Length: 99
Image (cartoon, rainbow, N blue to C red):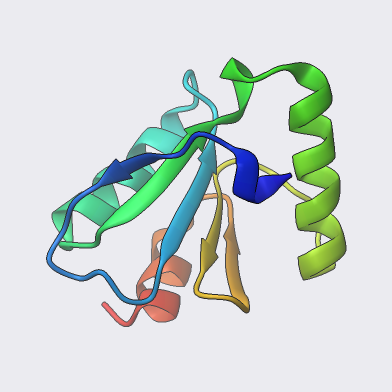
């Protein structure tokens, strides 16, 4: 289900690892997370989970929880194939992304 979503790409100098942000369009923490990525030159893709059908959103959340063994809160970011970030706690993002 996650691969079928219509992600919006954002260009940046750092394109590896692939960063994907699952966000809510009305979430201040989500906006701060994406601004953080842009300010640090990361290319990333995102999807606003509140702008897709609720059934699709629920299936995607289930898939993320099953893959990463963690409850999903927004923003939820995947970093490459195995790392993830839940919520926007800047020190965690800096550590995981090597900033």
